[in-house]
Length: 423
Ligand SMILES: [Zn+2]
Ligand SMILES: [Zn+2]
Ligand SMILES: [Zn+2]
Image (cartoon, rainbow, N blue to C red; front, side, top):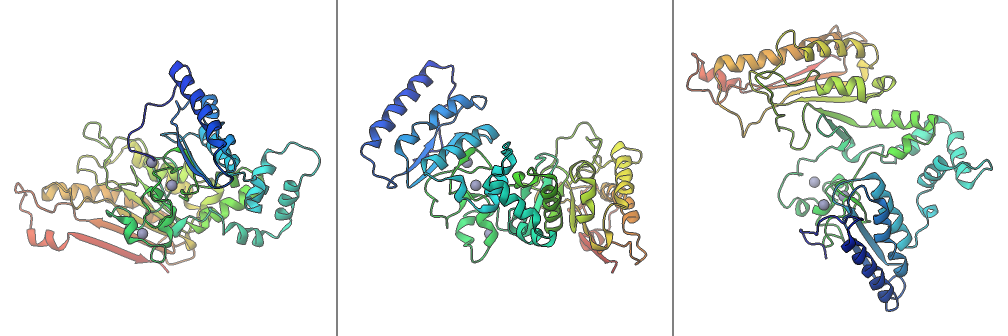
């Protein structure tokens, strides 16, 4: 049974590790003579030094003695690692005697055809040809049923993580979340935080989450971007991009998405980066020809202090202005909903003076300004479909040093939410 403490990761050059692996092999061989087919469910946690794929293969090899198992869960590293992940996945399939061909036809076709170098047509390449022979609209319908559409149809991206994560439900940070989220209430919650899901039949086996570890287990159904779908061939990659960018809402966090109000480390008394995360996402992450597919974009800025918002002339503002000009003709404004959220930390807000509050608002306006060029604002065809801005008056509570702040006004202005429809 998994406990919260483990031995240090196994190092292949360690003689103790070799002795341990030899003993594990003998144990599995001994156990195999007493275990009947498909009656044993086995969890193997053997954290390996992440560089050491060969040791990982030695650790999972004895599972073959016990195959076919009723079920098998394998974890090979405390941190995610692509090579060890693949070793774990292959080991679980072999231990359960599952052939890749009985996985879904689409997954099999994509998985096998991408690695095929044979000149004669294999069954998998026939699958692929069938898929590509379908009209594009039908291919889109099929791809809509893959992980290209995230649970809750929401994907987050942040400067800190630099990868796609599923959007979180409002219940995600509550204690005892699993108790509150049976699938009938929040269907999407079963596809994240698998270790915390009280409704899973595997709730007692510990954590084999593939998002957090190099592991493979039927207990983890956590969403991850379906990278393989983008790697099959150019045509399917283009289809997958259209489905991915047009069907999900994208929430871009200036620093990190979980928790969203965390502050980046500040260097000195100025904004620390040369670019906004939003600029990076729009210019470097989303392929230029996919910008037109975006239907919902939310840009979330961290709750910076009055001094830390970039001032006029800052490189990040210059880059932001150039980014807006660059994407202006590449997005489909009439189909795009844009939300700009200026972060607030209501439980961690420091008292600030009225002047400091105005300095924060001035920082917001410098970011908001270039966006006017994006929507057109003329109600014509180039206008954004919807545009929302969420701004919280930051000087609340007011610092006693407040320079003549009209406290009642501050109270009224505490939360300001603009909603602008251009349609
Ligand atoms: Zn939930
Ligand atoms: Zn874990
Ligand atoms: Zn998981």
